[in-house]
Length: 311
Image (cartoon, one colour):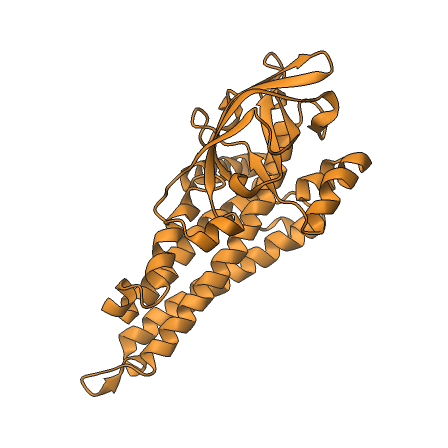
């Protein structure tokens, strides 16, 4: 929806955005491919103009919520000889369409549930076989697919971060509720120094995460360049939620390892956070490059460390 708001024409917003906002339809985003992985510029799905129609062929996977979608945004290569970041365009595809075939919902470390599938908590493998769409189905202009994808991912990372803070906060709440009532050797766990240090470390991580998100959101609201801070925050929050949930699980002992609390399920699910919307290693590589670039340009690394607002 954010992509349509930012880049859609008036007609596209009327036709696609309004029913999404009204809850009448759902949408998915088909960008990721096995062949490309973290490098979106390596995607192989093609789109060729045939008269008044585009014909798309290729494959996609991990298209989240595709199994319940009425509309798909499909990214494909339209201009193979253009500069690397201008080769791709994004198409609005109404579903179902015989050219957009869902092969399977990919099983992951986090098992599907009946409710989750109904809500769209699935990640599908897609075959795109002679998928035909009207010529005016391009969203945001020809050759702008990569740039729009990065815009969409930027806000996706912000959303993931908010979700991670919420889960970490809930995990710490569960841990606190357990240690104040659990006694060992005649003393509450909550009164033991080691346990308090564990709780303090979790509180500090959540606090840092909240400040990072507020800073990124501040820049997003003002249309500022948030790529560096967003990349740093994405990595930090993915590891932060793992640390906090792991600590909460440890404080629950064998109870935390069981499925009598949600902690074991959360622990399994959050492993994805270090992979989705770019793996940690790619973000860290880009962040480090920007630190070097900032120093070479300004003689200080401040603008690459969240200090841009204070120049």
